[in-house]
Amino acid sequence: MASPPQPGPYMPDLPAVPEWLNKGDNAWQLIAATLVGIQSMPGLVVIYGSIVKKKWAVNSAFMAMYAYASTLIVWVLVGFRMAFGDRLLPFWAKAGPALTQDFLVRRAVFPATAHYGSDGQLETPPTEPFYAEAALVLFEFEFAAITLVLLAGSLLGRMNIKAWMAFTPLWLLFSYTVGAFSLWGGGFLYQWGVIDYSGGYVIHLSSGVAGFTAAYWVGPRLKSDRDRFSPNNILLMIAGGGLLWLGWAGFNGGAPYAPNITASVAVLNTNVSAATSLLTWTCLDVIFFGKPSVIGAVQGMMTGLVCITPGAGLVHTWSAMLMGMCAGSVPWFTMMILHKKSTFLMKVDDTLAVFHTHAVAGLLGGVLTGLLATPELCAFDCPVPGMRGVFYGSGIGQMGKQLGGALFVTVWNLVVTSAILLCIGLFIPLRMSDDQLMIGDDAAHGEEAYALWGDGEKFDITRPEATRTGGAAAAREDTMEQRLTNMGARGVTIQL
Image (tube, rainbow, N blue to C red):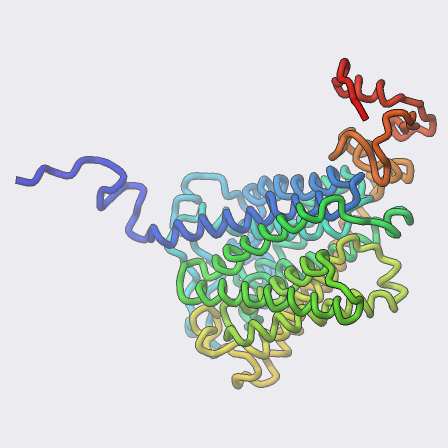
């Protein structure tokens, strides 16, 4: 006679496994959230810390780290429900916390995503994934966090860290949540039928426009930094880029909220577009400049990932290859040719060219998705019945929706970002002083990435060096023996 089942994690009916919970869906969503998180921490932290001049490595990495941490706290306090809660306005949901057991252990739902036809009949019910609300809160947080981290790329090398600390929660609440609800949470652009599969507009267009706007208000780096801003560690930059590329499997693969056919197509298309764009950008560098640029290759990879994002699960793989070719050429042209011929673009100091790699590439992806989205794949994922690209019979109307959605996101981010920074500027300087900018990390944080010697300096123990202290004009002469002693190296003998 068989013995009765013993209590344990594999019982058929566990209290922690309600009937609506699908363990596979739940596992994939948590993995996808972790992959997106790795894109920010450590992916973009590593890229920012290595792609900038040595004296800005710590500050740049910390701006990304701070944005990630502050976003999580604001997100669970009020942000998540402002983006994905019950409708308050056509572009905003009702604020509320995502902190209690009653809210987090119930089945996940997007309450405002029900779509009704012109006759008032329900055409698409609200989206209800087969896992708990807690998994959804985590996944959507990672998207919100990476948006702010990307935005930071426009401001590296001069923004007052205190102003950045004030900016991140305000921008999340008044800009990001509006775009997320409007396009994903059931807002007016979602109901209208604008296609943004996984954030070409919500994340990339908004971060590119907001970053460029913020760069205008904060002001430029020092001229010496703008003229020469060589990466301090290209190999580390490539490693960070690799984390970003592979993490995009969670970015686009998690967007359907289930490990289904759409997720599989999206992950394949993501990789194809990224590879095609990287190769296209590299070829253009060779054709016009005579040699391939490693930094350019990383930028090409980035634009390919960004461009495919609004349509990753909705287009053929040959379309993803075409989008990758466009992603590797159009942003290359705007960055390498158009930017240098425009007085206004040259005036605004967008440190990592986020406007080109994210705003231009995100808008390009949204437009191409409006052309190339297939009706079969749209039927799996889109809320409005019959959605498809222009090339598959939607008519020019779908393109009008794509451009209209982009216009709303652009104008909203331009206005809100400007308002936030102008308000912060009344209380906190947006830009560091020139004395601080001359020094870099040591002035901003009292710490340096590499402690022995600085930009362009040779390690010469016989030469005394003038060391600027605390941003003051006065300098002191320290021998190398004294510097080594201060670092705890007393008694160490150095032989040449």
